[in-house]
Image 1: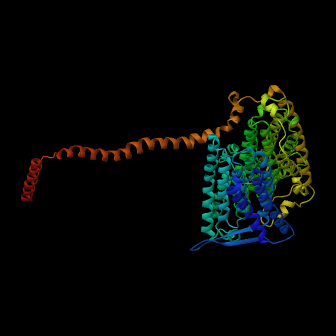
Image 2 (image 1 turned 90 degrees about the vertical axis):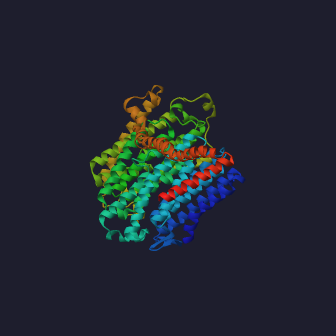
Amino acid sequence: MDIYISIALFAPLIGFGISGLLGRFLPKNITGLISSASVLLSFCCSIRLFTHLLNGGEALKLNLYNWISAGSISIDFSFLADNLSVWMMLIITGIGFLIHIYSIGYMKQDEGFYKFFAYLNLFIFSMLVLVLGSNYVLLFFGWEGVGLCSYLLIGFWYANSDFGYAARKAFIMNRIGDLGLLLGIFMLFSVFGSTDYHLVFTKAGQANSGTIELICLLLFIGAIGKSAQIPLFTWLPDAMAGPTPVSALIHAATMVTAGVYLIARSSVLFIGTEWVSTLVMVIGLLTALVAATIALKQNDIKKVLAYSTVSQLGYMFVALGVGAYSTALFHVTTHAFFKALLFLGSGSVIHAMSGEQDIRFMGGLRKKLKITHLTFLLGTLAITGVPPLAGFFSKDEILAKAFFGHGMLVFIILAITSVFTAIYMFRLYFLTFYGTFRGTDHQKSHLHESPLTMTIPLIVLAILSCIGGFLGLSSLFSHHHFVHDFLHKVLTDAAIPHPSHFFEMVILGASLLVLTVIIFTTYRFYTSAKNIPVALDQEVGVSKLLGHKYYFDELYRFIFQKPVEWMSKFTFQTIDRKLIDGIVNAFGKIADFFGTHLRTLQSGNVEYYLLAMVVGVVSFLVIYQLV
C-alpha cells in the first residue's frame, strides 16, 4: 500500500516538472491534460487509500529517509496516511482535478498557460505534503510551499501592479502567522524532544498544562494567518487578483483549509486547553459575523464570495473551538463542494462578460448562461443552508454543537450570520442572473455559455453540492455519522450532547421559514432597476462603513504601514543621508583639503626642497635637544 502514498504525493510534482520544463514546447491542451492527469492519478490513489481505511485497515506510514539528524534532533522525511490525512487528500485532489480541467478552458488564451499549470501542480503537491507529513516540520514545509504557490498564482498577471501588490500582501500577512507556527514547533521539540505526531500526542498528558496552552496559542496564530481569521484576514479578499481557478483552489480545496487541518490534527493538545479553545471559538465567531456583514455591500462578484469564504471559515473555527473537530471537517468538505462551484461559476460569468466583475453591470444572464445559472443557483442554495443540500447539514450541525457546547449567545450570533449569508448570496444571485442586462452592447453581444471543459466541472460540483450533505444525513435519524465515524480514530472530539430529533426538526423548520422570506424579499428588491447598488463613494452611514470593509485596511495602514514608511523616510534622510553620508563625505573633504594644500609643496623648484630639508633637520635637532 505504500506505493499508493508515493504515487499520490509525487504525481503532481512530476506534473509540475513536465509543465514547467516542457510546457512551452507542447500544445496547450496537451500540457493541460498532463497536469490534470497527474492530479487525477493522485485522486485515484487517494480513493484506494480511503477504501483501505474504510475496510478497517491500519494507518500507513511511509518513511523515505532520515531528513535531519544533528545531535538530539532526528526528523524523518516520512508520510502518514491515516483517516484525517486521507480524507483531506480526497478533497485536495478531487476538487483540484476539477479545477485543473476547468482551467484548460478558462486559461486557453493566456500566454503563460504552461506556467499556470505548473504552479497549480506545485500547489497540489505542497498541500499534499502538508496533510500527509507525519511530523510538524514536514507540515511546515508544505505550509510554506502553499504560501509560495499562492504568491505566484495571486500575482500571476504581474504586469498589473495592483495584482502584484495583492500577492505581496498575502505573502507578508501569512508570514506573521507562520512565525507563530514556527515558534510553536520549536516549543514542541523543546518539550517533547520530537515533532512526530505519534510521539507528541502520546506524551501530551505528561507535559505542563501552561506549556501546552502556550504551544496551542502559537499554533493557533499560524492558523489565523493561513485560514484568514481576524485580524489577519484582509489578504484573502485581495487574493481575488489571481485568475478565477486560483481563487477556487485557494478558497475551496487547499490553502485556507490548512489552518483548520492544523488545529484538527492537534486536537489531542487543544482539547485540554479551555481558554485557548474559547479564544479559537471567539475569533471564529467574530470573523464569521464581520465578514458576512462586509459581504452585504460588496459589488465585485469574486469579493462577495471571498468574504463568504472568510465567514464560512469562521464557522469552522467555532466548531474547532467548541471541540467539534469532526464537525469542522464535515463543513470543510461540504464547503469545498459549493464554494468551488460558486467560484468557478463566477469565472464562467466573468468569461462571458469579457472580464467584467461588477454585479451592478450584469443582470439577466440566466437566459444566455443556462448551465452556469442553474449550477450557480444550486451552489447558492447549498451555501445558504437550504435542505437537503450540502450546506444545510454541516452548517446546522455547527449551530447545534455551538448551542450545546457554548450556550445560547453563540448560537444566536451564528444564526444571525446565517441570515446575512442568505441575504448577500441571493443579492449576488438575483443581481447577476435576473432583471435586465446592465452591461455594454459589446458585452451583450459577447454573452455565451462557457465551453465543456468549464461547464462539466460545474455540473459535477453542483451534484456534489446537492448530495454532499448526505455524509451527515444519518444524524437526523440516529447518533451515527459517517464523517464522525471515519475520523474518530484520529480526532478527539469533546463530549457534546447530541441534539434531540425535536431540536433538529425545529432547526429545519426555522431554516426553511427564514430562507423562504429572504429569497422572496431579495427577489422583489434586487430585480427592480431602482434598487441597483450605487457606487461606493455615494454610500453613506452603515452602508459606507460596510462598503469600506470597516476600514480594516486603512486602519492597518495607519497603525503599521505609515509608521514604517515614516521611520524609513526618517532613517533615509537623517541617519543615512545626513549622519552616515556626512561622516563618509567628511573624510573625503578632509582628504581633499589636505590634498589641495599639500600639492602646492610640489612646486618642482629644488631650492625649496633643500630649504624644507634644512628646516626639517633643524627642527628635529631642536626637538631632540629639548627632550
